[in-house]
Image (cartoon, rainbow, N blue to C red):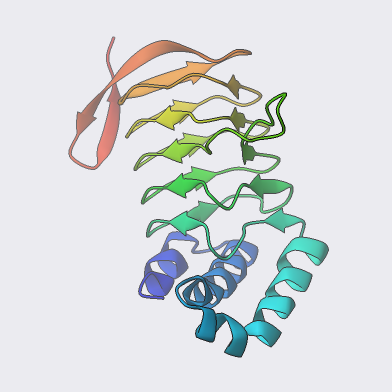
Length: 175
């Protein structure tokens, strides 16, 4: 819950993003204990109904999401609950982060997203993939392999096309 104010300021001018992140942060503590989950059950049902069914955003309350998460054009976002998302990330619409069902019926791990990651619209990150810090992934990319820190990746399958040089909190393109 401590991230509510950071998410609120990060989503300035984005009412839907603000609403979803406040609702998510209020629901997240229920993932910490069974007792709290039981007490919080009516709110969790409200969260699922409003955010998933009406807004079309699947962001399970037990997902680990760092501070300063920006939800751009909030719709058609699907995040597997075991995904880990770092701080100061920017996700656009129609993005999917999930795992893969194996032939034996088991599932792979879920993506781990680093800090300061920006995803274009229609990005799919599938499987036990690690996205490094300070990464940008272009619209329509399908990521099935790890992306190193300070990179720009695009395509299907996604490949690194440029390296970025970190400058303080910003990222600068290397010519």
